[in-house]
Image (cartoon, rainbow, N blue to C red; front, side, top):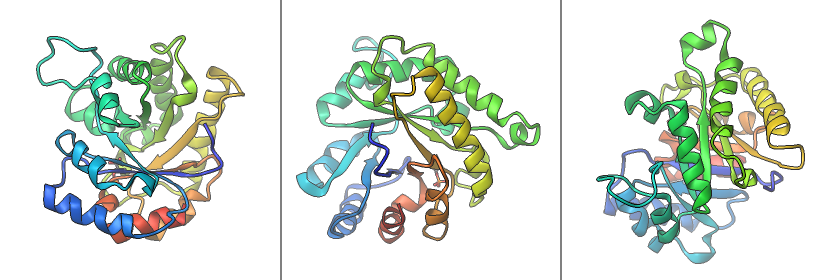
Length: 249
Ligand code: PEP
């Protein structure tokens, strides 16, 4: 993957409406030349709408926020990676902390979802990160490494060059608290060392930071070594904030 261009991904979470999405995307696509790679991860029911609104040359890619670990079949309520790919999604977020904590996705599930995404030709954005208790206990790097190892265990033989990683300290998500540049730098350097050891030094993996990224802190965070872009929650719902973050990348 080309890490010379930063990637900014909007995670709308469970927000939006047909009218609201059209307005938000109308504003975002009015701005010419975002200066970085951009993707929007919308709720399942709005994926087709987003795809239809985005001008083909907008350079904004479509992503989903979750995917089934299973292939097609008797899995009521699930959405397969093949379906997302068929629809025109490029990315899918896997293992977001809200899925891990609220929907009981464990490390193994996240690994199998990553495998399903890769097999369908999607670019999985795999989220890892520690709780505040884990940070206070001094085991942040251990937790992140355990989460990464669980993914590696499931993707043997698949194209690891398609994986995007996102470091999202759980205590910083939606909280208004942001990790300091020093904290981000330490974890991203550790993740970079991990990717080089496990994926090989010829593979360049984009490592995003996520956790209360705002227009006011984006430039500082994006300047940290090994930060190749951002995963943006709340601020991706406000066109001028999302655009300012893209311009800072
Ligand atoms: C997220 O949902 O991935 C996220 C980082 O949220 P926020 O930017 O609101 O903290």
